[in-house]
Length: 309
Image (cartoon, rainbow, N blue to C red; front, side, top):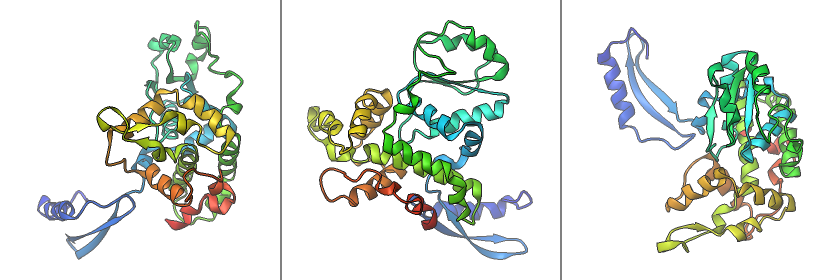
């Protein structure tokens, strides 16, 4: 609201907002407001489809990292390895670190996260547990001299290009490589659409990967609690590459937290991932999903959600 508007006018507006039903993601509410000089106005307020993106800057991440490097970082995060971001500016460092973790949705990083590590605390980099940290460029020589075991944070382990399922990685690579061409077809705000494009691409990656998990949830746990049939789920995907990746991914704390949260909620979890997973399952009448990459076959089909908005 404008600063010059008196509280006497703000309160009725806020009352109208509070009385309106809380909209579902992507839906709108209409409220009436009185503004001096304008009279009565009808305002339409839209709830974001995915509020996670309001403070996420994928553009900075893609400017600082090539698509290939970004997918290597993403793969390393999925296996809960130790990752250090290096940048010249604090703002860039923080934005990139937060954006990288946002790619993990609907999963959540379960380990240490320090987006900007003070120079006095660089010894934390020697921790044997998984972490995501950020350090300014002047700290790089000191970090490289530290006795960091097992992992070469700056050169990688050499297997980062082979971690993700091949077809799903190729689909992500194609979408990100062609993001400018995709966005040219859109006349709205480029930055907002880039965030939507990147977010949806990675959400669909996880939908293709684990979007069928609900088919393997049963009430067979202690006291009739919900429980994932892990063995059946791990073997269920028609793609051998996905099955091999799931054998690694299902041992991470990220996956454990994701499933535990859904085991506790009998009413189900509501969110963007669940919406996309439901669409995915609706297109497959058979008990097991098939046709990996159905949503990634054509460039237009891959980003069809942009035209639907």
